[in-house]
Image (cartoon, rainbow, N blue to C red; front, side, top):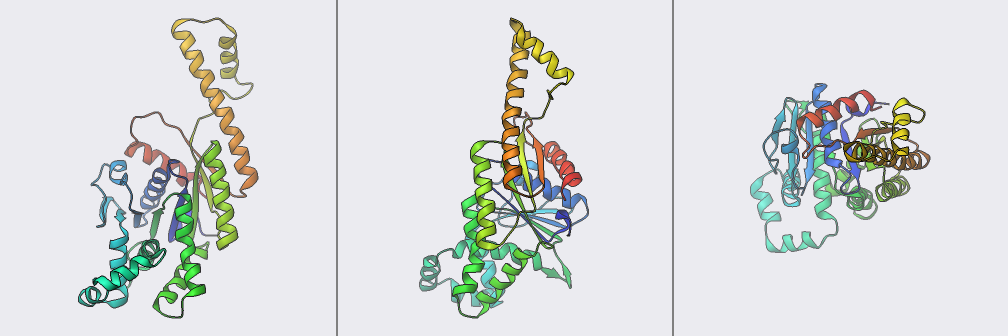
Length: 311
């Protein structure tokens, strides 16, 4: 099996608020550092990529964040225009066909057309070539929240089943083929060791498998409290002694902080076990970091960890 960081397309999925953009950025930083020309792709998002890499704000035009790493934050309108130009070749023809009131109204009435345009743009970048060579070695797609990403991924299957043969069906089959090839596409699930994110990750993985036949490449558990007080360790023994004493002042505050950290770690371990039992895939952990704003240092630290541990 092709290592995840060497695949053509890496899809990063998960519930809102679990750190998809953090993980997507870390993966993209890892592939770029390995010498792969990488496009970090998002759609209709409040951009954080520029902030993570101390670079420019990322919009619908591709921008460079660092060596080998570029990013784009597309919109349905931009994606649809690019897809239309791919088919019709000339902007004047595109404007005649797509930019009239009748066609615009018709397109807006088609369920899922905007999502399909975005997915199609990501696919286009995986096959984009210049002077006979691929423009991008890897596209890392920071997808929308769980339910929305599942709906987007289902569209090519729906098209191939319901739309007559033509350019749309042809491209849908190609997208379906790419998504279904585990040597070219990796699906990375991001979650947290908490109740709702864990339940949603398990549910989404089940739907990807049952509806589309797509399996996870790995699960990244983000913001996990580190195990600073392992059972039967000297640290745990000291914390136990502090807990048994009637403390006041700073020492009491330190003991309380340690006990809360230990409690959150124990709770996290419960959800790690639940994920392990439900999802038969490699599970990686990223630590909770206590900073006011994630920046380049944190993203690079995460990317190095993922480089070392991703299968």
